[in-house]
Image (cartoon, rainbow, N blue to C red):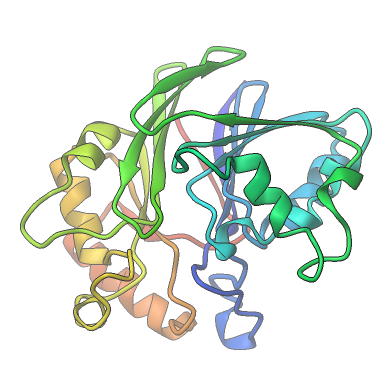
Length: 274
């Protein structure tokens, strides 16, 4: 009954199916968390498709999908998630960034309507439920899992998540934009003392200065947050599609020089929280 984090998609913005990106991976945001008997999925980017095939192969019959927000790179894998079409599979979809209308169910259905997609969401044969949990609230899942949320600074809103299980914890903080020299208290409170933090490290400082307002952060800010929040291990996440493997290796090495217990997320790898 362990606590593991597996990366199925680590990119932001758009998939990158190029040989130059294979080392770190080209799918967009999707992370699988196993906390005891619970299967928790963080975001529904293109990495959700291979994860879905694996869940069916393993005979998994239920999962909870936590959405940071509904920009396309974080939901475009949902129409291709095979378990959602499978009778007997229960999928609970949780979102916290929307207020009022449309709700999360309507947003997820809209991307599957013509002329955008030929197969409507109503054809999904699984047991789907959609839940709105306002950012800042906490809730429990079966099996002793507790989840805390926080609002993030991103166009159209976004939600960060902290998952706790049997004395260990991880936090998922993407997409968010920092303000120089003003640490985000929402984030610091959310990540305080976690064993593992996944943080939006899309840009270098130089790139970010030309993209203020886009809703993303930097690997240097990730380090500042990790140090300020007493994080045990930092994971750089949501890699820019323009950052090939060589660039990512350079960024990772620079980050590790400042914070040794740090790494850049690679598709297909698993971290065990102990």
